[in-house]
Length: 558
Image 1 (cartoon, rainbow, N blue to C red):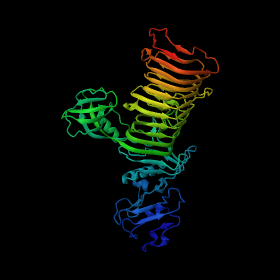
Image 2 (spheres, one colour):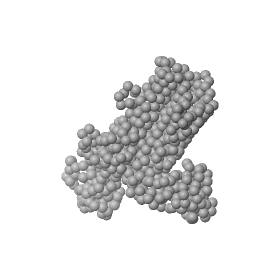
Image 3 (cartoon, rainbow, N blue to C red):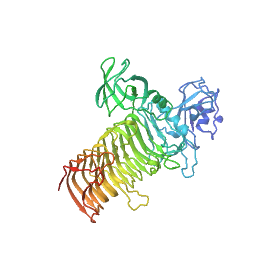
Image 4 (cartoon, rainbow, N blue to C red):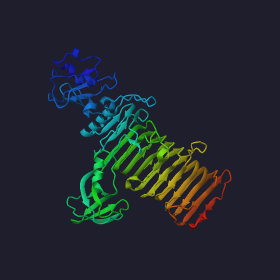
């Protein structure tokens, strides 16, 4: 059904073929049509794949030719169709528009490895909504094949809503070339500006001053400390991962022509060769109701790194599924993020991958994350040089995880809270899907009411001081708590144990850090049920090698 065009006396209704698709209709408009700019065509109904029906299309340039004739959105690279004279017809964006209106088909068969390649239409759609400032991308129902990264990684995508109709029906399948570190469907990043400033004095942690050669043009804001800024900009421009040897800082005040006052996120130790590079963060990105799916899993190398974010403020991810991926989601430099009701399934066990969500973030929350058969549900990781701090993980459930479901990394991290999180292994599975509940390697981590079942262990304090566990249930595990050579560990509240195979508390020497274990406080009401343990309930090791360790100031009550 066609509205608008048939009212033009210069075109007869006979010229509108009932078998003609919307884009073919527009592409075949020629000099007989005398409509002016802003004239609109609307077609309804959708009977042919790649039809582009169901939306309004508006003539942008009137009688002026501005492009190659007879091109659809895939060819123009934007939400334009060119008619027979090369005139632009642009889709009118509204709440009814989805990727299907641009030309996606969504008929990919994962098992049969066949179907339409929707990449160019998805790219055109994303570029167009961002260009006009509409910033609402809606993936239609269907399984959409993607063969190259969708978005321009040099563009700062602010206020973007990357949405699906619902998680079960709106699917992006990664069919990108095989790479070692996993391939990327969508990648957002803050841009690095071209301004450089030479640092002439090493910088220190938290508040500090930096002396530079010249502060002319230097503004307050977020900066990156680089040792090779030129290479970083080059990598950013060609769309690959930015590589640098620096960390993030914020310039609070330009004191003089050679001195600036800064706040650093983590320790910075750079020589006279370091430079400062301005960062323009992306912000307010929402990703919801989508499935990201890997394809042709070969040794874990092909998957979907859904996101690689550099200094992105307020990322919200809701109701998203990531499956058959080498890595579910990588987030680096995110502040004030919210991840809710997401699912992670069958992430690769090979090549050391299988992270559900790997991140380096500040002030973020994860709620209701549900995972199955992954290495880590959440790991702070160590890449990118960002510090993870002040984050909360609530009501997240992991099943059949073969690593530590919840893992925090020692490379710059602190102040984590895990509240009511669960790890359920499968100790009878021949693949070894049992793992352990928590591996704590960041300082000041608090775990509240954990539940760990059918696993190697419960909570492992590995190279992390000032850790707290308050309450919890541990069932069918070898040990409930393991402490490795770090001080100030508190085990508090009501601890329910059932069928503990070896030890309630086990201390071990850490091969990397030979520190004394001290100030271990166990002030918990421990209730144990089930079979007898295979070893002492509280086992504080002394190793027979030369690196003997001691436990100091141990308090056990209740």
